Length: 50
Image (cartoon, rainbow, N blue to C red; front, side, top):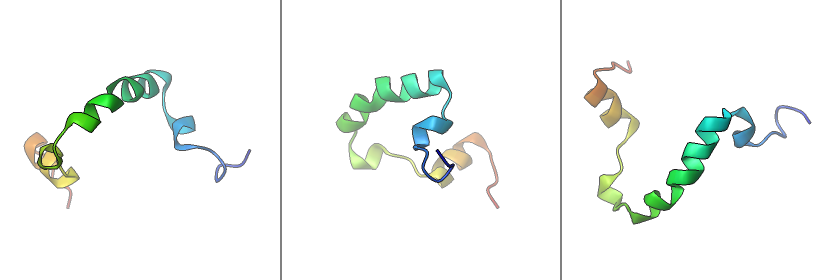
C-alpha cells in the first residue's frame, strides 16, 4: 500500500483513533455556532498562526 492509498486513520495513534471514535456522536449534538475555527482556537490558546 502506498502512502497515497492509506486512509487518514492509518496515520493516527491508537488512542487518538479511539477518542475520536468515542466522541463522534457528540459532534452530531453540537449546534453549528458551537464549532470553533482553527483561528479561534489558536487565539484562545495564545498561538500566533502568522
